[in-house]
Length: 150
Ligand code: FES
Image (cartoon, rainbow, N blue to C red; front, side):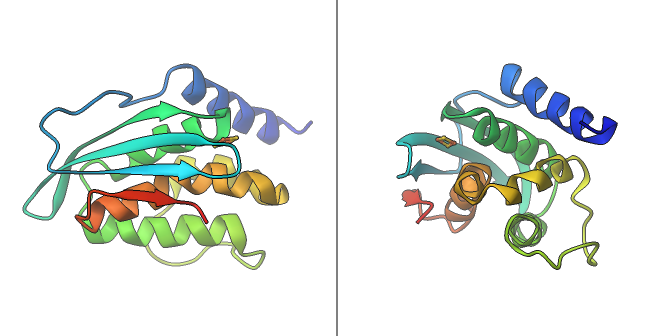
């Protein structure tokens, strides 16, 4: 295993073991429930938004290492960003997971999210990695509802 690959795996395991922003947010302005129908795993994403800026974000739920790490990394990168920037990161991350041609595109850098790039080689796990993001997308839509990754 290359050094880079093992570093990536370490980051994923660290976020699985100690997920950042893993908590209920009683005062959330918006939230949504996400569901991966392939495995039954569920998660809720909470948002506090002020003047279009994501002041706070948290999540709760149960899932595999990939889904938990992805949610944890997502909360770290979107906190302090505008809702529009978060949506841009979602579409860029989605392309990273699904588009073979993606190398480096313009816009906000994906930063640590790139540790999940290897997931693309396992199509069944792409839904794990994108569960939190689909849930975020629904919460940003202010619809406070349930979303599935299908
Ligand atoms: Fe359920 Fe990954 S196996 S979200």
